[in-house]
Length: 401
Image: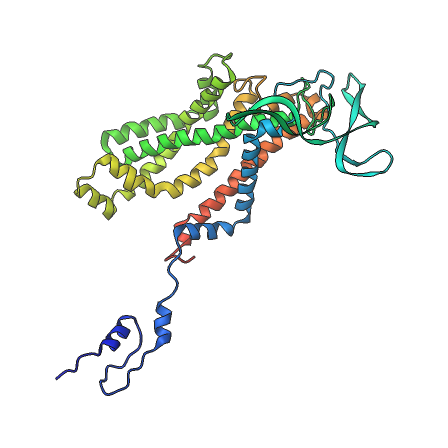
Protein backbone atom coordinates (compact mmCIF):
# COMPACT_ATOMS: atom_id res chain seq x y z
CA UNK A 1 0.00 0.00 0.00
CA UNK A 2 1.38 3.42 -0.97
CA UNK A 3 1.98 5.81 1.92
CA UNK A 4 0.45 9.30 1.46
CA UNK A 5 2.85 12.16 1.01
CA UNK A 6 3.18 14.23 4.20
CA UNK A 7 1.60 17.71 3.92
CA UNK A 8 4.86 19.45 4.81
CA UNK A 9 6.71 17.55 2.08
CA UNK A 10 3.97 18.27 -0.43
CA UNK A 11 4.13 22.00 0.42
CA UNK A 12 7.91 22.02 0.05
CA UNK A 13 7.76 20.16 -3.26
CA UNK A 14 5.20 22.59 -4.61
CA UNK A 15 7.60 25.45 -3.88
CA UNK A 16 10.54 23.84 -5.64
CA UNK A 17 12.44 22.67 -2.56
CA UNK A 18 14.37 19.38 -2.53
CA UNK A 19 12.61 16.77 -0.32
CA UNK A 20 12.79 13.04 0.40
CA UNK A 21 9.55 11.05 -0.13
CA UNK A 22 10.73 8.07 1.99
CA UNK A 23 8.31 7.99 4.99
CA UNK A 24 10.99 6.50 7.24
CA UNK A 25 13.61 9.07 6.33
CA UNK A 26 13.82 12.39 8.16
CA UNK A 27 12.27 15.33 6.32
CA UNK A 28 15.01 17.36 4.62
CA UNK A 29 14.17 20.62 2.86
CA UNK A 30 16.70 22.45 0.72
CA UNK A 31 15.99 26.05 1.71
CA UNK A 32 18.57 27.43 -0.74
CA UNK A 33 16.56 26.13 -3.69
CA UNK A 34 13.39 27.63 -2.24
CA UNK A 35 15.07 31.02 -1.79
CA UNK A 36 16.43 30.91 -5.34
CA UNK A 37 12.91 30.58 -6.76
CA UNK A 38 11.58 33.43 -4.63
CA UNK A 39 13.66 35.98 -6.57
CA UNK A 40 12.70 39.61 -6.94
CA UNK A 41 9.66 40.19 -9.16
CA UNK A 42 10.31 41.39 -12.71
CA UNK A 43 10.72 45.13 -13.19
CA UNK A 44 7.87 47.24 -14.44
CA UNK A 45 8.07 48.57 -18.02
CA UNK A 46 8.55 52.09 -16.68
CA UNK A 47 11.59 51.11 -14.61
CA UNK A 48 13.08 49.18 -17.51
CA UNK A 49 12.55 52.17 -19.81
CA UNK A 50 14.20 54.60 -17.38
CA UNK A 51 17.13 52.25 -16.76
CA UNK A 52 17.72 51.89 -20.50
CA UNK A 53 17.37 55.65 -21.07
CA UNK A 54 19.98 56.42 -18.41
CA UNK A 55 22.49 54.40 -20.42
CA UNK A 56 22.42 57.16 -23.06
CA UNK A 57 23.96 60.34 -21.57
CA UNK A 58 23.40 62.22 -24.84
CA UNK A 59 19.66 61.55 -24.57
CA UNK A 60 19.63 62.87 -21.01
CA UNK A 61 21.56 65.98 -22.08
CA UNK A 62 19.17 66.48 -25.00
CA UNK A 63 16.17 66.22 -22.69
CA UNK A 64 17.65 68.72 -20.22
CA UNK A 65 18.44 71.20 -23.01
CA UNK A 66 14.90 70.94 -24.37
CA UNK A 67 13.34 71.43 -20.94
CA UNK A 68 15.55 74.49 -20.44
CA UNK A 69 14.56 75.98 -23.81
CA UNK A 70 10.84 75.35 -23.32
CA UNK A 71 10.86 76.83 -19.81
CA UNK A 72 12.62 79.95 -21.13
CA UNK A 73 10.06 80.26 -23.93
CA UNK A 74 7.19 79.76 -21.49
CA UNK A 75 8.54 82.48 -19.17
CA UNK A 76 9.77 84.75 -21.99
CA UNK A 77 7.87 87.90 -20.86
CA UNK A 78 9.46 87.62 -17.42
CA UNK A 79 12.98 86.56 -18.43
CA UNK A 80 13.29 88.99 -21.37
CA UNK A 81 14.27 92.52 -20.27
CA UNK A 82 12.27 94.11 -23.12
CA UNK A 83 9.36 93.32 -25.41
CA UNK A 84 9.94 91.88 -28.86
CA UNK A 85 8.75 95.10 -30.57
CA UNK A 86 10.62 97.63 -28.40
CA UNK A 87 13.20 99.60 -30.43
CA UNK A 88 16.23 101.67 -29.40
CA UNK A 89 16.79 104.20 -32.16
CA UNK A 90 20.21 105.15 -30.76
CA UNK A 91 21.66 101.66 -30.97
CA UNK A 92 21.14 99.99 -34.33
CA UNK A 93 23.34 96.90 -34.83
CA UNK A 94 24.70 97.21 -31.29
CA UNK A 95 27.10 94.33 -30.48
CA UNK A 96 26.49 92.12 -27.43
CA UNK A 97 27.30 93.85 -24.16
CA UNK A 98 30.29 92.47 -22.27
CA UNK A 99 29.66 91.65 -18.61
CA UNK A 100 32.42 92.94 -16.30
CA UNK A 101 33.30 92.20 -12.69
CA UNK A 102 36.49 94.34 -12.53
CA UNK A 103 36.02 98.11 -12.86
CA UNK A 104 38.34 100.68 -14.46
CA UNK A 105 40.16 101.12 -11.11
CA UNK A 106 40.94 97.40 -10.85
CA UNK A 107 38.40 96.73 -8.08
CA UNK A 108 36.51 93.44 -8.12
CA UNK A 109 32.68 93.43 -7.88
CA UNK A 110 30.47 90.47 -7.06
CA UNK A 111 27.63 92.05 -9.01
CA UNK A 112 28.38 92.10 -12.77
CA UNK A 113 28.03 95.37 -14.64
CA UNK A 114 28.07 96.71 -18.19
CA UNK A 115 29.50 99.93 -19.58
CA UNK A 116 27.59 102.52 -21.53
CA UNK A 117 28.59 102.79 -25.18
CA UNK A 118 28.77 105.57 -27.73
CA UNK A 119 28.59 105.39 -31.50
CA UNK A 120 32.18 105.97 -32.63
CA UNK A 121 31.67 105.32 -36.36
CA UNK A 122 28.07 105.81 -37.59
CA UNK A 123 28.71 104.44 -41.09
CA UNK A 124 30.16 101.17 -39.76
CA UNK A 125 27.96 101.06 -36.61
CA UNK A 126 31.06 100.74 -34.45
CA UNK A 127 30.51 101.33 -30.74
CA UNK A 128 33.03 102.09 -27.99
CA UNK A 129 32.66 101.52 -24.26
CA UNK A 130 32.82 104.39 -21.79
CA UNK A 131 34.83 103.13 -18.76
CA UNK A 132 33.46 105.94 -16.61
CA UNK A 133 29.83 104.91 -17.15
CA UNK A 134 29.43 101.56 -15.42
CA UNK A 135 25.91 100.24 -14.83
CA UNK A 136 25.37 97.30 -12.43
CA UNK A 137 22.98 94.56 -13.49
CA UNK A 138 19.89 94.50 -11.30
CA UNK A 139 17.53 91.60 -10.75
CA UNK A 140 13.75 91.74 -10.57
CA UNK A 141 13.52 95.20 -12.07
CA UNK A 142 10.37 96.94 -13.28
CA UNK A 143 9.80 97.47 -16.98
CA UNK A 144 7.12 96.97 -19.63
CA UNK A 145 3.90 95.36 -18.44
CA UNK A 146 3.09 91.86 -19.70
CA UNK A 147 0.73 88.95 -19.18
CA UNK A 148 2.42 85.79 -17.90
CA UNK A 149 0.83 82.52 -19.02
CA UNK A 150 -2.40 84.45 -19.56
CA UNK A 151 -3.05 84.21 -15.81
CA UNK A 152 -1.84 87.49 -14.33
CA UNK A 153 -0.23 90.75 -15.34
CA UNK A 154 3.08 92.08 -14.04
CA UNK A 155 5.86 94.50 -14.92
CA UNK A 156 8.70 92.74 -13.08
CA UNK A 157 11.50 91.36 -15.27
CA UNK A 158 14.27 88.97 -14.26
CA UNK A 159 17.10 91.44 -14.87
CA UNK A 160 17.84 94.88 -16.30
CA UNK A 161 19.55 98.19 -15.60
CA UNK A 162 18.50 101.24 -13.61
CA UNK A 163 17.00 104.29 -15.28
CA UNK A 164 17.13 104.62 -19.05
CA UNK A 165 20.26 102.48 -19.42
CA UNK A 166 19.83 99.32 -21.48
CA UNK A 167 21.54 95.96 -21.59
CA UNK A 168 21.89 93.88 -24.76
CA UNK A 169 23.35 90.49 -23.89
CA UNK A 170 23.09 89.28 -27.50
CA UNK A 171 23.19 92.63 -29.31
CA UNK A 172 20.50 94.39 -31.35
CA UNK A 173 19.19 94.06 -34.89
CA UNK A 174 18.75 96.60 -37.69
CA UNK A 175 15.82 98.23 -35.82
CA UNK A 176 17.60 98.45 -32.46
CA UNK A 177 15.58 95.58 -30.95
CA UNK A 178 17.11 93.36 -28.29
CA UNK A 179 18.14 90.03 -29.82
CA UNK A 180 17.95 88.19 -26.48
CA UNK A 181 14.34 89.26 -25.91
CA UNK A 182 13.36 88.42 -29.48
CA UNK A 183 15.07 85.02 -29.19
CA UNK A 184 12.89 84.13 -26.19
CA UNK A 185 9.68 85.40 -27.76
CA UNK A 186 10.59 83.74 -31.05
CA UNK A 187 11.06 80.46 -29.22
CA UNK A 188 7.39 80.57 -28.26
CA UNK A 189 6.56 80.33 -31.97
CA UNK A 190 9.33 78.10 -33.31
CA UNK A 191 9.29 75.58 -30.45
CA UNK A 192 5.53 75.21 -30.14
CA UNK A 193 4.97 74.90 -33.90
CA UNK A 194 6.74 71.54 -33.76
CA UNK A 195 4.78 70.19 -30.80
CA UNK A 196 1.33 71.28 -31.97
CA UNK A 197 2.05 70.21 -35.54
CA UNK A 198 3.18 66.78 -34.36
CA UNK A 199 0.05 66.30 -32.23
CA UNK A 200 -2.24 67.12 -35.18
CA UNK A 201 -0.36 65.25 -37.91
CA UNK A 202 0.34 62.16 -35.80
CA UNK A 203 -3.31 62.01 -34.70
CA UNK A 204 -4.31 62.01 -38.37
CA UNK A 205 -1.62 59.50 -39.26
CA UNK A 206 -2.59 57.13 -36.44
CA UNK A 207 -6.29 57.29 -37.23
CA UNK A 208 -6.04 56.99 -41.01
CA UNK A 209 -3.24 54.43 -40.88
CA UNK A 210 -5.19 52.36 -38.36
CA UNK A 211 -8.36 52.48 -40.45
CA UNK A 212 -6.45 51.62 -43.62
CA UNK A 213 -4.67 48.63 -42.09
CA UNK A 214 -7.69 47.24 -40.26
CA UNK A 215 -10.39 47.52 -42.92
CA UNK A 216 -8.27 47.02 -46.05
CA UNK A 217 -9.98 46.81 -49.42
CA UNK A 218 -11.23 50.01 -51.06
CA UNK A 219 -10.69 52.04 -47.88
CA UNK A 220 -7.06 51.00 -47.78
CA UNK A 221 -6.56 51.80 -51.47
CA UNK A 222 -8.06 55.30 -51.22
CA UNK A 223 -6.05 56.29 -48.14
CA UNK A 224 -2.79 54.88 -49.46
CA UNK A 225 -3.20 56.60 -52.84
CA UNK A 226 -3.73 59.89 -50.99
CA UNK A 227 -0.54 59.36 -48.99
CA UNK A 228 1.42 58.52 -52.13
CA UNK A 229 0.16 61.71 -53.78
CA UNK A 230 1.31 63.83 -50.84
CA UNK A 231 4.67 62.07 -50.59
CA UNK A 232 5.32 62.47 -54.32
CA UNK A 233 5.32 66.29 -54.09
CA UNK A 234 8.53 67.91 -52.75
CA UNK A 235 7.63 69.11 -49.26
CA UNK A 236 9.26 72.55 -49.52
CA UNK A 237 7.36 73.46 -52.69
CA UNK A 238 4.14 72.09 -51.23
CA UNK A 239 4.59 74.17 -48.06
CA UNK A 240 5.20 77.37 -50.06
CA UNK A 241 2.26 76.65 -52.38
CA UNK A 242 -0.11 76.07 -49.46
CA UNK A 243 1.14 79.22 -47.73
CA UNK A 244 0.38 81.21 -50.89
CA UNK A 245 -3.30 80.37 -50.42
CA UNK A 246 -3.43 82.63 -47.35
CA UNK A 247 -3.20 86.44 -47.65
CA UNK A 248 0.27 87.79 -46.92
CA UNK A 249 -1.06 90.48 -44.54
CA UNK A 250 -2.70 88.11 -42.06
CA UNK A 251 -2.14 88.86 -38.34
CA UNK A 252 0.71 86.94 -36.75
CA UNK A 253 -1.62 84.72 -34.71
CA UNK A 254 -3.48 83.59 -37.84
CA UNK A 255 -0.21 83.09 -39.73
CA UNK A 256 1.00 80.91 -36.85
CA UNK A 257 -2.14 78.76 -37.00
CA UNK A 258 -1.84 78.58 -40.78
CA UNK A 259 1.76 77.34 -40.56
CA UNK A 260 0.75 74.69 -38.02
CA UNK A 261 -2.09 73.54 -40.29
CA UNK A 262 0.19 73.40 -43.35
CA UNK A 263 2.92 71.42 -41.61
CA UNK A 264 0.37 69.04 -40.08
CA UNK A 265 -1.32 68.53 -43.46
CA UNK A 266 1.85 67.33 -45.16
CA UNK A 267 3.23 65.44 -42.15
CA UNK A 268 0.64 62.72 -41.60
CA UNK A 269 1.20 60.74 -44.82
CA UNK A 270 4.50 59.07 -43.96
CA UNK A 271 3.32 58.01 -40.51
CA UNK A 272 0.04 56.63 -41.88
CA UNK A 273 1.92 54.22 -44.16
CA UNK A 274 4.03 52.90 -41.29
CA UNK A 275 1.04 52.56 -38.94
CA UNK A 276 -0.84 50.67 -41.65
CA UNK A 277 1.95 48.09 -41.80
CA UNK A 278 2.01 47.73 -38.01
CA UNK A 279 -1.77 47.32 -37.86
CA UNK A 280 -1.71 44.61 -40.54
CA UNK A 281 0.51 42.49 -38.27
CA UNK A 282 -1.18 43.39 -34.97
CA UNK A 283 -4.72 42.59 -36.16
CA UNK A 284 -3.77 38.89 -36.47
CA UNK A 285 -2.95 38.60 -32.75
CA UNK A 286 -5.15 36.44 -30.55
CA UNK A 287 -6.50 39.25 -28.37
CA UNK A 288 -7.75 41.14 -31.46
CA UNK A 289 -9.43 38.01 -32.83
CA UNK A 290 -10.98 37.38 -29.41
CA UNK A 291 -12.32 40.95 -29.24
CA UNK A 292 -13.89 40.53 -32.67
CA UNK A 293 -15.47 37.23 -31.59
CA UNK A 294 -16.97 38.93 -28.52
CA UNK A 295 -18.64 41.52 -30.73
CA UNK A 296 -16.52 44.51 -29.70
CA UNK A 297 -17.05 47.44 -32.05
CA UNK A 298 -14.43 48.02 -34.72
CA UNK A 299 -13.73 51.55 -33.52
CA UNK A 300 -13.02 50.25 -30.01
CA UNK A 301 -10.80 47.47 -31.35
CA UNK A 302 -8.74 49.99 -33.32
CA UNK A 303 -8.45 52.58 -30.54
CA UNK A 304 -8.15 50.24 -27.51
CA UNK A 305 -6.46 47.08 -28.79
CA UNK A 306 -4.46 47.94 -31.90
CA UNK A 307 -3.22 51.54 -31.86
CA UNK A 308 -1.90 51.44 -28.24
CA UNK A 309 0.54 48.74 -29.38
CA UNK A 310 2.13 51.25 -31.77
CA UNK A 311 2.91 53.85 -29.09
CA UNK A 312 6.56 52.91 -28.68
CA UNK A 313 7.16 53.57 -32.37
CA UNK A 314 5.00 56.71 -32.38
CA UNK A 315 6.84 58.28 -29.42
CA UNK A 316 10.22 57.80 -31.07
CA UNK A 317 8.98 58.93 -34.49
CA UNK A 318 7.36 62.04 -33.01
CA UNK A 319 10.50 63.03 -31.13
CA UNK A 320 12.66 62.67 -34.23
CA UNK A 321 10.08 64.46 -36.43
CA UNK A 322 9.71 67.62 -34.32
CA UNK A 323 12.92 69.21 -35.75
CA UNK A 324 11.45 68.90 -39.24
CA UNK A 325 8.44 70.97 -38.21
CA UNK A 326 10.65 73.56 -36.52
CA UNK A 327 12.81 73.82 -39.63
CA UNK A 328 9.66 74.11 -41.76
CA UNK A 329 8.59 77.20 -39.82
CA UNK A 330 12.12 78.58 -39.98
CA UNK A 331 12.21 78.19 -43.76
CA UNK A 332 8.84 79.89 -44.23
CA UNK A 333 9.76 82.81 -41.97
CA UNK A 334 13.24 83.09 -43.50
CA UNK A 335 11.67 83.35 -46.97
CA UNK A 336 9.31 86.05 -45.71
CA UNK A 337 6.08 84.06 -45.97
CA UNK A 338 5.92 82.89 -42.36
CA UNK A 339 5.53 84.91 -39.17
CA UNK A 340 5.69 88.60 -40.09
CA UNK A 341 7.40 91.50 -38.36
CA UNK A 342 7.23 92.89 -35.74
CA UNK A 343 6.41 89.50 -34.21
CA UNK A 344 9.51 87.37 -33.86
CA UNK A 345 10.36 83.79 -34.71
CA UNK A 346 13.75 82.19 -35.16
CA UNK A 347 13.16 82.15 -38.89
CA UNK A 348 12.54 85.87 -39.37
CA UNK A 349 15.40 86.64 -36.98
CA UNK A 350 17.64 84.62 -39.28
CA UNK A 351 16.23 86.59 -42.21
CA UNK A 352 18.19 89.64 -41.03
CA UNK A 353 21.50 87.85 -41.64
CA UNK A 354 21.03 87.32 -45.38
CA UNK A 355 23.45 90.00 -46.61
CA UNK A 356 27.23 89.67 -46.81
CA UNK A 357 27.63 92.80 -44.71
CA UNK A 358 25.48 91.37 -41.94
CA UNK A 359 27.51 88.16 -41.89
CA UNK A 360 30.86 89.98 -41.75
CA UNK A 361 30.05 93.06 -39.64
CA UNK A 362 27.17 91.88 -37.42
CA UNK A 363 27.72 88.12 -36.99
CA UNK A 364 25.46 87.89 -33.93
CA UNK A 365 22.48 88.25 -36.27
CA UNK A 366 23.40 84.82 -37.61
CA UNK A 367 24.76 82.92 -34.64
CA UNK A 368 22.07 83.93 -32.12
CA UNK A 369 19.08 82.30 -33.89
CA UNK A 370 21.29 79.85 -35.78
CA UNK A 371 22.80 78.41 -32.61
CA UNK A 372 19.36 78.14 -30.98
CA UNK A 373 18.04 76.21 -34.00
CA UNK A 374 21.12 73.97 -34.10
CA UNK A 375 20.98 73.12 -30.39
CA UNK A 376 17.25 72.42 -30.51
CA UNK A 377 17.49 70.12 -33.52
CA UNK A 378 20.47 68.25 -32.05
CA UNK A 379 18.75 67.91 -28.67
CA UNK A 380 15.64 66.40 -30.27
CA UNK A 381 17.78 63.99 -32.30
CA UNK A 382 19.79 62.90 -29.25
CA UNK A 383 16.60 62.40 -27.23
CA UNK A 384 14.96 60.51 -30.09
CA UNK A 385 17.92 58.15 -30.42
CA UNK A 386 17.84 57.48 -26.68
CA UNK A 387 14.09 56.83 -26.67
CA UNK A 388 14.45 54.49 -29.64
CA UNK A 389 17.03 52.40 -27.79
CA UNK A 390 15.11 52.47 -24.50
CA UNK A 391 11.84 51.38 -26.13
CA UNK A 392 13.40 48.74 -28.40
CA UNK A 393 11.81 45.40 -27.37
CA UNK A 394 14.85 43.51 -28.63
CA UNK A 395 16.89 45.05 -25.81
CA UNK A 396 14.54 43.80 -23.10
CA UNK A 397 13.76 40.10 -22.59
CA UNK A 398 11.83 38.72 -19.67
CA UNK A 399 12.15 41.90 -17.63
CA UNK A 400 15.94 41.80 -17.89
CA UNK A 401 18.18 43.63 -20.36
